[in-house]
Amino acid sequence: MLRVFEYWFMRYRRTWRGTAVISFANPLLFLIGIGAGLGHLVDLHSSARMGDASYAAFFAPGLLAAAAMQTAFLESSWVVATAAMPDGAYQSTLPTPLDPEEVMAGHLLFVGFRVITSSAAFVIVMACFGLVSGARSPWVLLSAALTGLAFATPAAAWSVGVRVLRKGNTVFRMVIMPMYMFSGTFFALSQLPRPLRVLIEALPLAQGVELCRSLSLGTAAAGPTAARIGYLGALAVLGFVLARLAYRRRLHA
Image (cartoon, rainbow, N blue to C red; front, side, top):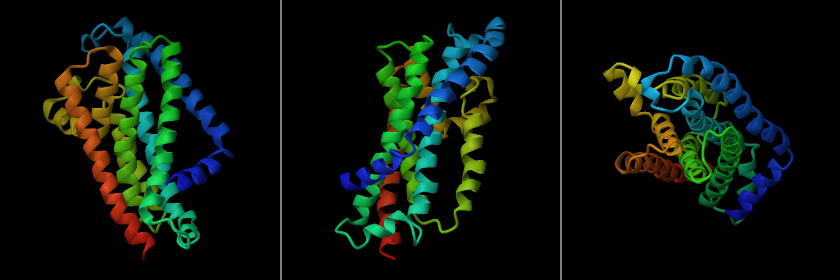
């Protein structure tokens, strides 16, 4: 497993500067443009649904969860699908003693590394803006990592069997982007009609957003927090089990 992780890490060493810019520049621009810019207008017409928090403090942890989802999906969809192609990286492991489970676990370990490092960069930017306290930062970071894993393992389980890469674009446009827009990243779900709110609250990103937001704002209650952690953890474990089956089926085909 560690040898597979080392392989993906060595590849990443060639491109890390570009992702570092994205990891720091994206949250910085979003927080300035939406959190501080639009947030100033929202704060002038303060909404009781955000409690005592500013719009920037409300918005930032939601964006953190959404960014973790995007990073996890991108790293475990196209990359996995490409690696599983006949001329992909996975094929070079077939003559080695590595079995499909080790190939999968090593790659998912690297995806977790990418989610944690990019989320850590985001949390540092939040702390610099005073949007999260130092004591709450580690819990917010772990929540973002859990949100990312809840998407990474199911995405890898699906992507390793994909034989047409453009299917990844379809899933991104039809599933990931709508979830990004409507899972409460930019607004409070309590403003929605109840039937629609119940439907959206069932989405994993909505649970990740609420988990990160409640921990960041210090409003987390034990029961709902445990339920959200259990929900996201169950998705990650289920995706891991399905990925084991899918990797074995594809690499032994």
